[in-house]
Image (cartoon, rainbow, N blue to C red; front, side, top):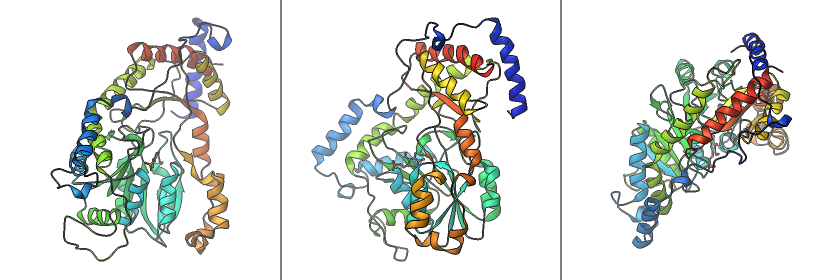
Amino acid sequence: MDRRAFLATAAAASLASAEAAPQLAVNGGAPVRSQPLGTANWGPLYYDDKEQTQLSDVLRSRKPFRFANSLEQSKVAIFENEYAARMQTKYALAVTSGTAALHTAMAALEVGPGDEVIIPAWTWYSCYATVIQVGALPVFAEIDESFNIDPADIEHRITPQTKVIMAVHLQGNPAGMDPILAIAHKHGLKVLEDCSQSVGASYKGRPLGSMGDIAIYSLQQSKTITAGEGGALVTNDPYLFERAVRFHDVTVRRDFPAKLHYMPGLNYRMNEFTGGVLLAQLRKLDTIIADVRRNARHVYSGIRDVPALHLRHLPDPEGELGTGIFLGFRSSAERQRYAAAMKAEGVPVAGPAGSVVLPVVPEIEQKVTVTLRWPSFASERGQSIRYGRECCPRTLDILSRFAGVMMGPKYTERDTEDAVTAIRKVYPAIVSA
Ligand SMILES: Cc1ncc(COP(=O)(O)O)c(C=O)c1O
């Protein structure tokens, strides 16, 4: 919705809320609930004897190292096979974290000194840090109201040095992959999908991670499924896969004769305990997703007719996980008023979370670019890129104006009903004030 339409519908909301306005709890009215609504991390809520059995198997086997087991017996190898099948890709590689997966993806894509990677200004530290670690330059693009990279802000940032576009699917919401893939195709660029915050979501029927050249996932505690730490990488490209396997396993490739030239690999191998827990969790992935989506949809449908409703942009509402019901406001001050009023109702909201506005992180603006004299930044091109607030004003503005009720897969009907009641009570009162 553009700003003019928003203002017009806000005026309509003003009339509607004047008719029957229950007293807000923040003004002394009765709160919607006494126990604040909130969720624990999703994956661990589903831990049961399945994870326990996997762990016991590994203890009994006395073979916690994945390559001490045959391909048929290794929990990590079985996890990889089932993960690739779930994500509809030819290959999957298990690694120790999402950050390790990003580093491995950079190595697989041969990103190095002189290369540039376009990444969203709002994302997790590792997206930026791994680009720097391989000696390349990060170039930030603005986000749009999906909180993901704005496809319309990519093309003018492409230079002859650009090698990769990183599409990060944040907080359960797929990025607009069709325009991103079209731009990449037009300019001969690779696409890396970071699905860490949206494991299991999809875009127009395709699982996230299956559309780019390579994709990564974090399986750390706050992600859809977890063993505390863990990560995965998927691709359909045998060359990229072989490079990834060799990089994550000190250059060697144990189950095939070496085909590629030497590349210096590290050790990001997953152990069998982690593999076992993740295997049990993966088999519950669709249950977890169905549960959280059901709850989110209950809230979406309960607030659909709220006047002036300004929802976060969802490029594919069917594929979204429903991590949070994010609503937009005209200003940061208005967002703050909504947050205070919702908290008083016992249905707290949070701003977009789990990521950082990278260009304005002081270490990035100052220490790395100026003090450390890291070679990529010391180059003429590196010196010419302006980081800081001026490179992403729209990102800062969008993030300051949205807030959401976070969803949990184990919410009861009463919980989601309370979310609906609180939003219906508070949102019109705030946007019509
Ligand atoms: C978008 C994104 N990418 C990468 C990572 C890194 O994952 P990990 O913490 O498993 O290293 C995270 C972690 O939160 C993330 O949110």
